[in-house]
Length: 94
Image 1: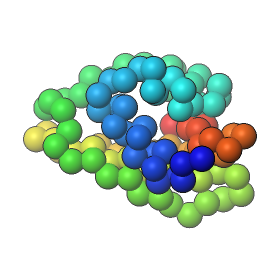
Image 2: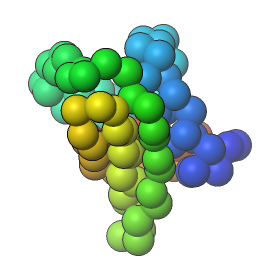
Image 3: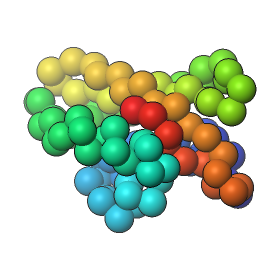
Image 4: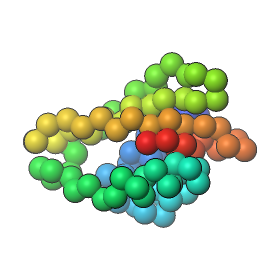
């Protein structure tokens, strides 16, 4: 099993590359529902020139992770909550 940081780094790479297959496999059913409800929000200013994964303090089985993407228009932070599901880290909330 990849550690949480590795899983989150792969997720942000898939997000930037718009790798839908990789993204789909990274969500719990609840997380997927929340992501779909958000809809597709276009990236302003082009692709990110910098990305960063920040692990925050865990609370029980919830492990918050901030995903930061920056480009010429500024910085966006996507708040996610990850859970270990059968030995695989999955996005449970976004």
